Image 1: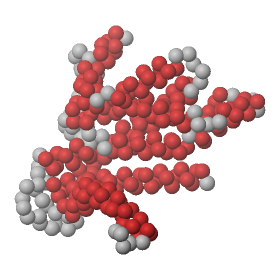
Image 2: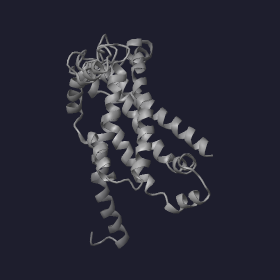
Image 3: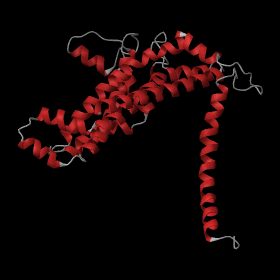
Image 4: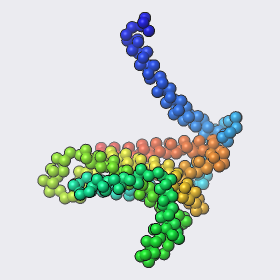
Length: 292
Protein backbone atom coordinates (compact mmCIF):
# COMPACT_ATOMS: atom_id res chain seq x y z
CA UNK A 1 0.00 0.00 0.00
CA UNK A 2 3.08 2.21 0.10
CA UNK A 3 2.49 3.35 -3.51
CA UNK A 4 -1.12 4.39 -2.88
CA UNK A 5 -2.34 7.83 -2.06
CA UNK A 6 -3.79 8.51 1.40
CA UNK A 7 -7.32 8.66 -0.06
CA UNK A 8 -6.90 5.27 -1.81
CA UNK A 9 -5.47 3.65 1.34
CA UNK A 10 -8.41 4.98 3.34
CA UNK A 11 -10.89 3.55 0.81
CA UNK A 12 -9.14 0.12 0.77
CA UNK A 13 -9.16 -0.10 4.58
CA UNK A 14 -12.80 0.98 4.71
CA UNK A 15 -13.88 -1.61 2.14
CA UNK A 16 -11.82 -4.31 3.90
CA UNK A 17 -13.63 -3.69 7.18
CA UNK A 18 -17.01 -3.60 5.42
CA UNK A 19 -16.43 -6.80 3.46
CA UNK A 20 -16.54 -9.14 6.48
CA UNK A 21 -19.86 -7.99 8.06
CA UNK A 22 -21.55 -7.60 4.65
CA UNK A 23 -20.28 -11.02 3.60
CA UNK A 24 -21.55 -12.64 6.83
CA UNK A 25 -24.90 -10.86 6.45
CA UNK A 26 -25.26 -12.12 2.89
CA UNK A 27 -24.16 -15.66 3.79
CA UNK A 28 -26.38 -16.16 6.84
CA UNK A 29 -29.37 -13.91 6.04
CA UNK A 30 -29.92 -13.13 2.37
CA UNK A 31 -28.68 -16.42 0.89
CA UNK A 32 -31.05 -18.56 3.05
CA UNK A 33 -33.91 -16.15 2.24
CA UNK A 34 -33.28 -16.41 -1.52
CA UNK A 35 -32.92 -20.20 -1.20
CA UNK A 36 -36.27 -20.38 0.63
CA UNK A 37 -37.97 -18.35 -2.13
CA UNK A 38 -36.50 -20.72 -4.72
CA UNK A 39 -37.68 -23.81 -2.79
CA UNK A 40 -41.17 -22.35 -2.46
CA UNK A 41 -41.58 -22.98 -6.21
CA UNK A 42 -40.53 -26.62 -5.92
CA UNK A 43 -41.79 -29.90 -4.43
CA UNK A 44 -38.52 -30.67 -2.57
CA UNK A 45 -39.01 -33.29 0.14
CA UNK A 46 -36.09 -32.16 2.31
CA UNK A 47 -33.55 -34.89 1.50
CA UNK A 48 -33.55 -35.58 -2.26
CA UNK A 49 -30.61 -34.27 -4.26
CA UNK A 50 -32.87 -33.15 -7.12
CA UNK A 51 -35.32 -30.29 -6.81
CA UNK A 52 -38.28 -30.26 -9.23
CA UNK A 53 -39.66 -26.86 -10.30
CA UNK A 54 -43.49 -26.73 -10.10
CA UNK A 55 -44.11 -23.00 -10.50
CA UNK A 56 -46.79 -21.41 -8.32
CA UNK A 57 -48.58 -24.66 -7.39
CA UNK A 58 -47.59 -24.38 -3.72
CA UNK A 59 -49.07 -20.88 -3.48
CA UNK A 60 -52.29 -22.06 -5.17
CA UNK A 61 -52.48 -24.91 -2.66
CA UNK A 62 -52.13 -22.50 0.29
CA UNK A 63 -54.93 -20.17 -0.81
CA UNK A 64 -57.25 -22.92 -2.07
CA UNK A 65 -56.93 -25.33 0.86
CA UNK A 66 -58.98 -24.15 3.87
CA UNK A 67 -56.94 -26.45 6.12
CA UNK A 68 -53.89 -24.27 5.39
CA UNK A 69 -55.00 -20.65 4.88
CA UNK A 70 -58.14 -21.17 7.01
CA UNK A 71 -56.09 -21.62 10.19
CA UNK A 72 -55.52 -17.85 10.19
CA UNK A 73 -59.01 -17.65 11.77
CA UNK A 74 -57.47 -19.29 14.84
CA UNK A 75 -55.19 -16.24 15.22
CA UNK A 76 -58.12 -13.81 15.73
CA UNK A 77 -58.40 -14.45 19.52
CA UNK A 78 -54.66 -13.73 19.86
CA UNK A 79 -55.07 -10.38 18.07
CA UNK A 80 -58.19 -9.41 20.08
CA UNK A 81 -56.59 -10.26 23.42
CA UNK A 82 -53.40 -8.54 22.23
CA UNK A 83 -55.36 -5.29 21.77
CA UNK A 84 -56.83 -5.64 25.29
CA UNK A 85 -53.33 -6.42 26.54
CA UNK A 86 -52.03 -3.09 25.17
CA UNK A 87 -54.93 -1.16 26.73
CA UNK A 88 -54.12 -2.65 30.14
CA UNK A 89 -50.39 -2.00 29.58
CA UNK A 90 -51.08 1.70 28.96
CA UNK A 91 -53.29 1.95 32.06
CA UNK A 92 -50.73 0.21 34.28
CA UNK A 93 -47.94 2.37 32.81
CA UNK A 94 -49.89 5.55 33.62
CA UNK A 95 -50.61 4.35 37.18
CA UNK A 96 -47.02 3.24 37.83
CA UNK A 97 -45.65 6.48 36.36
CA UNK A 98 -47.33 8.40 39.19
CA UNK A 99 -45.94 8.89 42.69
CA UNK A 100 -47.36 5.56 43.91
CA UNK A 101 -45.71 4.02 46.96
CA UNK A 102 -43.96 0.74 46.07
CA UNK A 103 -44.25 1.42 42.33
CA UNK A 104 -40.84 -0.18 41.59
CA UNK A 105 -41.98 -3.43 43.22
CA UNK A 106 -45.17 -3.46 41.13
CA UNK A 107 -43.12 -2.77 37.96
CA UNK A 108 -40.88 -5.76 38.70
CA UNK A 109 -43.83 -8.04 39.52
CA UNK A 110 -45.62 -7.15 36.27
CA UNK A 111 -42.46 -7.49 34.14
CA UNK A 112 -41.39 -10.79 35.77
CA UNK A 113 -43.56 -13.11 33.56
CA UNK A 114 -41.80 -11.82 30.42
CA UNK A 115 -38.39 -13.16 31.47
CA UNK A 116 -39.78 -16.65 32.08
CA UNK A 117 -39.10 -19.34 29.50
CA UNK A 118 -42.08 -19.83 27.15
CA UNK A 119 -42.07 -23.64 27.51
CA UNK A 120 -41.93 -23.36 31.32
CA UNK A 121 -44.87 -20.94 31.18
CA UNK A 122 -46.82 -23.38 29.00
CA UNK A 123 -46.24 -26.24 31.45
CA UNK A 124 -47.17 -23.98 34.36
CA UNK A 125 -50.50 -23.07 32.77
CA UNK A 126 -51.17 -26.73 32.06
CA UNK A 127 -51.85 -27.04 35.80
CA UNK A 128 -53.87 -23.81 35.79
CA UNK A 129 -56.19 -24.99 32.99
CA UNK A 130 -56.40 -28.65 34.04
CA UNK A 131 -60.08 -29.67 33.94
CA UNK A 132 -60.07 -31.89 37.04
CA UNK A 133 -57.44 -30.44 39.35
CA UNK A 134 -56.59 -27.03 37.82
CA UNK A 135 -56.43 -23.95 40.02
CA UNK A 136 -58.80 -22.00 37.73
CA UNK A 137 -61.55 -24.62 37.96
CA UNK A 138 -60.94 -24.88 41.72
CA UNK A 139 -61.72 -21.16 41.94
CA UNK A 140 -64.86 -21.60 39.80
CA UNK A 141 -66.01 -24.48 42.03
CA UNK A 142 -65.52 -22.27 45.09
CA UNK A 143 -67.96 -19.70 43.70
CA UNK A 144 -70.42 -22.37 42.50
CA UNK A 145 -69.62 -22.57 38.76
CA UNK A 146 -69.16 -25.92 36.98
CA UNK A 147 -65.77 -27.00 35.69
CA UNK A 148 -64.78 -25.77 32.21
CA UNK A 149 -62.60 -27.64 29.74
CA UNK A 150 -60.34 -24.69 28.92
CA UNK A 151 -58.08 -26.57 26.50
CA UNK A 152 -60.57 -29.21 25.33
CA UNK A 153 -63.38 -26.96 24.12
CA UNK A 154 -63.05 -25.92 20.47
CA UNK A 155 -64.86 -22.61 21.09
CA UNK A 156 -62.58 -21.30 23.84
CA UNK A 157 -59.25 -23.09 23.42
CA UNK A 158 -57.65 -20.23 21.43
CA UNK A 159 -58.88 -17.64 23.94
CA UNK A 160 -57.41 -19.76 26.75
CA UNK A 161 -54.04 -19.93 24.98
CA UNK A 162 -54.14 -16.21 24.09
CA UNK A 163 -54.77 -15.31 27.74
CA UNK A 164 -51.39 -16.86 28.58
CA UNK A 165 -49.82 -14.41 26.13
CA UNK A 166 -51.64 -11.59 27.91
CA UNK A 167 -50.18 -12.72 31.25
CA UNK A 168 -46.66 -13.03 29.80
CA UNK A 169 -46.37 -9.94 27.58
CA UNK A 170 -48.51 -7.28 29.29
CA UNK A 171 -45.60 -6.28 31.57
CA UNK A 172 -43.23 -6.09 28.61
CA UNK A 173 -45.57 -3.70 26.75
CA UNK A 174 -46.04 -1.74 29.98
CA UNK A 175 -42.29 -1.15 30.38
CA UNK A 176 -42.08 0.24 26.83
CA UNK A 177 -45.03 2.58 27.49
CA UNK A 178 -43.51 3.56 30.82
CA UNK A 179 -40.26 4.61 29.11
CA UNK A 180 -42.24 6.72 26.62
CA UNK A 181 -44.30 8.34 29.39
CA UNK A 182 -41.17 9.41 31.24
CA UNK A 183 -40.01 11.21 28.07
CA UNK A 184 -43.11 13.48 28.09
CA UNK A 185 -42.17 16.84 29.67
CA UNK A 186 -43.77 17.37 33.09
CA UNK A 187 -44.54 20.99 32.12
CA UNK A 188 -47.28 19.76 29.80
CA UNK A 189 -49.04 18.00 32.67
CA UNK A 190 -48.65 21.10 34.87
CA UNK A 191 -50.20 23.25 32.12
CA UNK A 192 -53.14 20.84 31.67
CA UNK A 193 -53.69 20.86 35.44
CA UNK A 194 -53.76 24.68 35.49
CA UNK A 195 -56.27 24.59 32.58
CA UNK A 196 -58.55 22.45 34.73
CA UNK A 197 -58.25 19.14 32.82
CA UNK A 198 -59.31 16.07 34.79
CA UNK A 199 -57.41 12.75 34.73
CA UNK A 200 -59.39 11.26 31.86
CA UNK A 201 -59.00 14.41 29.72
CA UNK A 202 -55.27 14.45 30.45
CA UNK A 203 -55.00 10.78 29.47
CA UNK A 204 -57.06 11.15 26.27
CA UNK A 205 -55.82 14.52 24.97
CA UNK A 206 -52.23 14.57 26.24
CA UNK A 207 -50.87 11.12 27.12
CA UNK A 208 -52.35 9.01 24.29
CA UNK A 209 -51.33 11.42 21.44
CA UNK A 210 -47.77 11.44 22.78
CA UNK A 211 -47.72 7.63 22.80
CA UNK A 212 -48.92 7.18 19.19
CA UNK A 213 -45.58 5.98 17.79
CA UNK A 214 -45.03 3.64 20.74
CA UNK A 215 -48.57 2.26 20.42
CA UNK A 216 -47.77 1.63 16.73
CA UNK A 217 -44.60 -0.24 17.71
CA UNK A 218 -46.30 -2.32 20.41
CA UNK A 219 -49.25 -3.17 18.18
CA UNK A 220 -46.84 -4.30 15.45
CA UNK A 221 -45.04 -6.54 17.97
CA UNK A 222 -48.38 -7.85 19.22
CA UNK A 223 -49.84 -8.61 15.79
CA UNK A 224 -46.66 -10.22 14.46
CA UNK A 225 -46.42 -12.25 17.67
CA UNK A 226 -50.03 -13.36 17.19
CA UNK A 227 -49.33 -14.43 13.60
CA UNK A 228 -46.18 -16.32 14.59
CA UNK A 229 -47.56 -18.05 17.68
CA UNK A 230 -46.17 -21.56 17.96
CA UNK A 231 -44.87 -22.59 21.37
CA UNK A 232 -48.08 -22.45 23.44
CA UNK A 233 -50.33 -24.57 21.14
CA UNK A 234 -47.41 -26.92 20.40
CA UNK A 235 -46.73 -27.66 24.07
CA UNK A 236 -50.26 -27.51 25.49
CA UNK A 237 -52.64 -28.82 22.81
CA UNK A 238 -50.59 -30.03 19.82
CA UNK A 239 -53.16 -28.17 17.70
CA UNK A 240 -56.17 -29.92 19.26
CA UNK A 241 -58.94 -30.50 19.96
CA UNK A 242 -59.74 -31.57 16.36
CA UNK A 243 -57.31 -29.00 14.96
CA UNK A 244 -59.12 -26.07 16.64
CA UNK A 245 -55.91 -24.53 18.02
CA UNK A 246 -53.65 -25.15 15.01
CA UNK A 247 -51.76 -22.02 13.97
CA UNK A 248 -50.19 -21.21 10.62
CA UNK A 249 -46.65 -21.66 11.97
CA UNK A 250 -47.58 -24.97 13.62
CA UNK A 251 -49.02 -26.08 10.28
CA UNK A 252 -45.83 -24.96 8.50
CA UNK A 253 -43.58 -26.99 10.80
CA UNK A 254 -45.91 -29.97 10.48
CA UNK A 255 -45.84 -29.70 6.66
CA UNK A 256 -42.04 -29.60 6.58
CA UNK A 257 -41.02 -32.15 9.19
CA UNK A 258 -43.99 -34.52 9.42
CA UNK A 259 -45.06 -34.65 5.76
CA UNK A 260 -41.60 -33.87 4.30
CA UNK A 261 -42.99 -31.20 1.96
CA UNK A 262 -40.34 -28.50 2.31
CA UNK A 263 -41.44 -26.78 -0.90
CA UNK A 264 -44.95 -26.13 0.42
CA UNK A 265 -43.59 -25.21 3.87
CA UNK A 266 -41.24 -22.65 2.25
CA UNK A 267 -44.18 -21.12 0.36
CA UNK A 268 -46.14 -20.92 3.64
CA UNK A 269 -43.20 -19.10 5.25
CA UNK A 270 -43.14 -16.58 2.37
CA UNK A 271 -46.91 -16.02 2.70
CA UNK A 272 -46.50 -15.36 6.44
CA UNK A 273 -43.65 -12.93 5.75
CA UNK A 274 -45.64 -11.02 3.10
CA UNK A 275 -48.72 -10.92 5.32
CA UNK A 276 -46.66 -9.45 8.18
CA UNK A 277 -45.28 -6.78 5.82
CA UNK A 278 -48.80 -5.91 4.60
CA UNK A 279 -50.10 -5.53 8.15
CA UNK A 280 -47.15 -3.29 9.06
CA UNK A 281 -47.75 -1.12 5.95
CA UNK A 282 -51.51 -0.90 6.62
CA UNK A 283 -50.93 0.06 10.24
CA UNK A 284 -48.37 2.68 9.19
CA UNK A 285 -50.77 4.21 6.63
CA UNK A 286 -53.73 4.29 9.07
CA UNK A 287 -51.76 5.95 11.87
CA UNK A 288 -50.10 8.48 9.53
CA UNK A 289 -53.50 9.34 8.03
CA UNK A 290 -54.91 9.87 11.52
CA UNK A 291 -51.96 12.10 12.48
CA UNK A 292 -52.29 14.08 9.24
